[in-house]
Length: 180
Image 1 (spheres, rainbow, N blue to C red):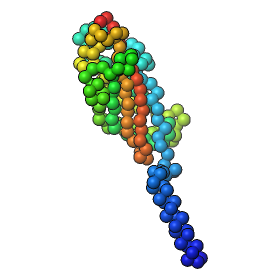
Image 2: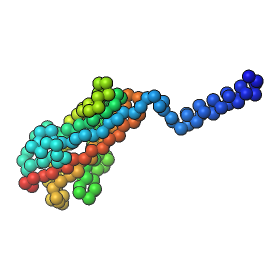
Image 3: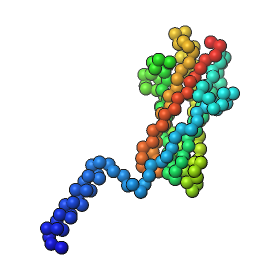
Image 4: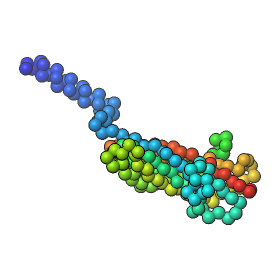
């Protein structure tokens, strides 16, 4: 091989490496996680498998107002959920409660979601439970200007899969006041 051909091969390899670095290409042999939200429900509600969290006009036990979010993993790549942002709005999309100043309630967490064994075609379900109702949100529901008496809680989960790809999933539940 002559010097000219070798020089061109080195230049070609260097230019391809530069393209890969600049474009942020990842290794095609490292797939991203196949994950989705399969269900969202009130953890202890009679309305299981419903995207509504009923709140009654009495002194609330905030722990009983948990929301369970189920995630379905379909391939062999696990996921680490590292944070969730809960943003509260009224029916028109206007932010409510004192959380509007900070862009919602931001929670840090470390939840590892194990992939299904042997690429099970049914996948594997993992769950996260969150306390979406707190004194600030309860006070916002009591506001006389909030009609009808419900608040939308939009939860955005962020993290990374085991191959380094970013994960962002969003779910929404209605916090509805009864008897106010």
